[in-house]
Image (cartoon, rainbow, N blue to C red; front, side):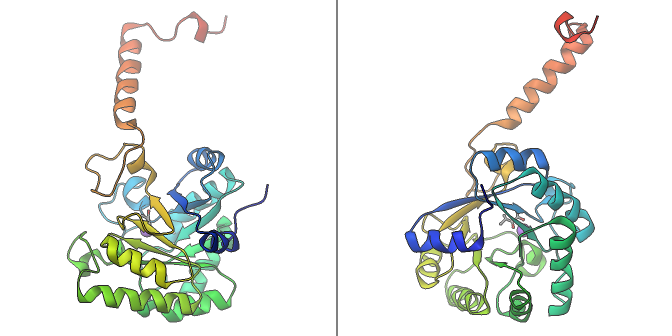
Length: 264
Ligand code: KIV
Ligand code: NA
C-alpha cells in the first residue's frame, strides 16, 4: 500500500477518527511501528536526549538528524515521516527554514517537517507551505525554548491559554497541516481541538486531541523517570537489564554459546 498523506490526516479529523504518532530514530524501530500500523513517525529532536545523550534538545544539529531521518524513511513503507527542524535551523529567517526543510526532504526523504512556536515563526510556515512542504506546528511546552520557559513545566494556564489559542489559529491560517500541543491543561487542548479544522496531536494534553504522540523509549518503559503524561506499554528497561545480565553471566560461565549456536 501507499504512504499515509497529510490529506489522509485531514480526512481522519473530518471523520472523527483518532490516530497515533510515535517517534523513531532508526530503521528497525521504524519498521516495527510501521508494521504495527502507526500512521505517522516523528524523527524528533528528542534524539538529542535519547540517541545522543545530551540533557536538552538544544545541541542537536541537522547533520545529527539527517541520517536518522533517512533510516526511518528506509525502514518504513506506510507511515508519513515527519522530521523535526532542530534549534537554530529555522528561527533566523524563512529562507533559513526552507533551506533546512529542503535538506530533510532531499537528503533524507522526509515527507513533512515540524517546527516549534506560534506567531514568531509564521513567516517561516508560510514560505514552507508555499514551497510545498507540509508543516506541523508545536505549541505549549516547546523544549527548544526551555531556557526561556524556565524549565519543563505545564504551559498555557490562565492568560497564556488565550495566547496559545491565537498561535494555533495563526498556524492553521498559515497553512500548517497539524499542531502538536505539549504539556497543556486538557481544557485548553479541547478548546483548541474544537476550534481548529486541522488535527491537534497531544502529548501531556489530555484525551481530547485528535491524535496522541509519545517518545517511543517512554512508552516502551525504557526511560528512567518518565513524565506524568507517559504510559508505559512495555517494561523494556527491566527486560534489557535481565537479558544483558543473563548474557554476561552465561559468557562468564562458559554456558553461551551452546552447541546449537555453533558451526561444526
Ligand atoms: O522531539 C520530539 O520527540 C517531539 C515530540 C515529543 C512531539 O517533538
Ligand atoms: Na521535538
